[in-house]
Image 1 (cartoon, rainbow, N blue to C red):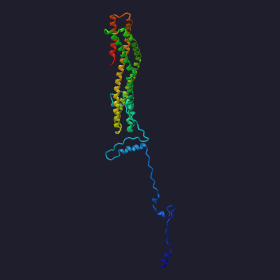
Image 2: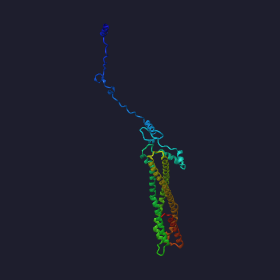
Image 3: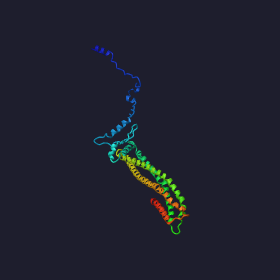
Image 4: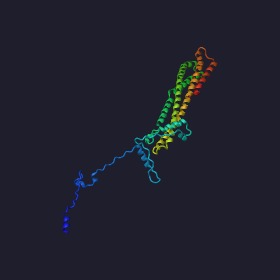
Amino acid sequence: MQASTGSQQSGPAPSRPSPTKLAGPLAGPEAGAPAAATERTTTPAPTRLAPAAKAADLHAAAFRTGGDERAEPLQASALPGVRSLPFQASVPALQQLFPQACALSLQQAAHAVSSAPLPGSAVLAWVRYGEKAQQTLAELVRQRLELADGKPLRLVPALLRHLHGRMADVLEAFQGGVFRRSPARVWRETAPEVALLEAQLRQALPVLQSLHDQLGDLISRVRAAQQALQALDMACMFLMDKVGAHIQPTLAARAGAVLASLALAMEQLQMLTEDQSRLLELMQLVQDGVLLKLPAVLSQLARLNGAAHAPLNETQRLLLTEVVLEFSTFIENHLTP
């Protein structure tokens, strides 16, 4: 028994495995440190979404709320790379809103809608909406004032008043009392001036005709400006519920300004029509009245040139008095005060 026991103790002892040495930076005193401490944490780069994807995410986030409540929709903004489409208005849609407008006005209104600032534009872009049409009208008003204050419209009435005054001098010589001057002497002093006035009136007649044509052209241009402003007024009404709430006050102010310019255009159109009518009356007075009647009057008064040698009898005197009186009264009745 002891021998077997001894034989068991004298056998080889079991070997214990030695620790394995790792090559690299973990061998040594820092081998027991956690691996996480040696690794560097890198922050992932932000993902760049395409502009269209950003717009889609913003639109989806506006309605991503719980229950039946919805968040307020986000206002459109000008994102880089996103092209905003202009406002559009079809002629049938405008005709439903403005059934009394003509086809041309509806087409102009549709063009005015498409010419509005793009959706998402800043408020400052709407401040000048329709300003070009208003500036056009202001220029036409200035031109009308220049024509109304032109030299021909002041010169011709002055010439007619001067001619009326010279005829009144001759008439006074015929109708005078005891101390009256001789009609023949008065006519000799007056005849050269009357001839000059006749020549000046004939020269002014083509100028009046040209001015009449200018007024006609100006009436057409003011009427076109009125139609453009009327189209802008319809466009403002159409766009009022298409723009954002922050644009509506500015658009309402522009609509009020356009409406005031439209009233001014209608007023100017009426005044131009009256100016053209008065000018036509003045042309008819000069051409078909004064210049037509004056030669006959001058022919009758030419008898006074020989009155020094053969005095006029009473019948001839009364006849000349009637001729001068009729011509003088004709001018007086047509002259404006």
